[in-house]
Image (cartoon, rainbow, N blue to C red; front, side, top):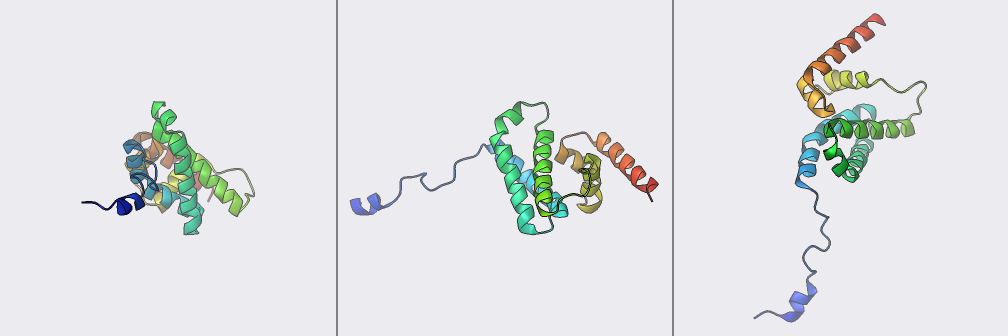
Length: 147
């Protein structure tokens, strides 16, 4: 026999629980969060700021999730959201003295600082490995010519 008072005191199932997210989105977040966070920490050395930027980017990605899935390259679009969000947070912390950084510089950061190989970078930014390798070579040559 159950006690009606005890069962009435319990909240109905589902109340107070976070809303369910699509399995694909949860998998996307799990796969990309560590790399996104490593990238954000380069630009935002304070771990709280970096984590906040990544969380904000994932919130924006969640809002656009259905549209992203319908696009030709969801990963590339998500990367642009992250990159823009980190850039916004960077500008708040330290206004720039010049133009915004080139996208290829981000590849160099992911490779030389974060430590990702070209195939991993391609997975993160949503492109092919050959493109990443070529862009890394161009970035390295551009930097070397400036020495």
